[in-house]
Every structure is written in C-alpha cells, then in structure tokens.
Length: 137
Image (cartoon, helix red, strand yellow):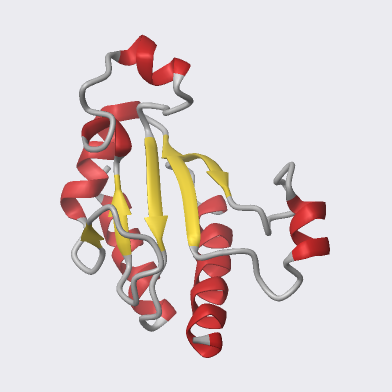
C-alpha cells in the first residue's frame, strides 16, 4: 500500500504541475502546489505527498468540461477515489446534476470543475490522455 500511495501522490503532483502550464486550464486546486492556500499545511503534515486527487477547471465552463470528459480514453468516468486506475468526474453533470447553476455555486461546485483521481499508471500515459482530451476543447 505504501508504494501505491506514493505513486498516486507523485502522479497527481505531476498532473497538477502539467495542468498549470496549459492555456486551456482556468484553475488548479492541489494542496502540494505552492499556489495553493493549503500548501504550508500540506508541507507540514504531508511532506511525502498530499493526495492523489487533483481538481481543476477549464476555460469555457461547463461545455468545455463536457467536451474534455467525452474525449478521455485512459481515465474512467467514475466516482471512485484512490482506485489504481485513473478516474475522472464532472460533478455538475453527475453527482450534482439535480442542481441548477445557483445551487451549484452555493454548494461550491463550479460548472467547469473536473475531479481527477490520479491512478498508478505510467505518468506519460496519463499526461498523454489529458493532453489529447484538451486538444479537442
């Protein structure tokens, strides 16, 4: 388990850093990024890696998020976290689909929010899947 969690964290860190460099990404939320308001806490309490989940938003809002989700090939659309396989979710269209835009905002669920639970696959494969999906957005 300790090897698997280490891989989840390392892959998620790489994904978060990679997303920051893409002009189609509106924002990235990952506690081990220096830009995160939780960075100092993550460094203090989780010095070997914070987690395997990266949240981000796409410029273009809900429509861009929907297009991104449809184009993914490696990542599985599922509500799981910490699965060995990379899983992805667009909460506005899945777990929170019954809410309108005002209710989503009140719940803190942005229409462009993508939650990526990064698996333990080869990081090159994960990044390639993200990039090819973003190319179509």
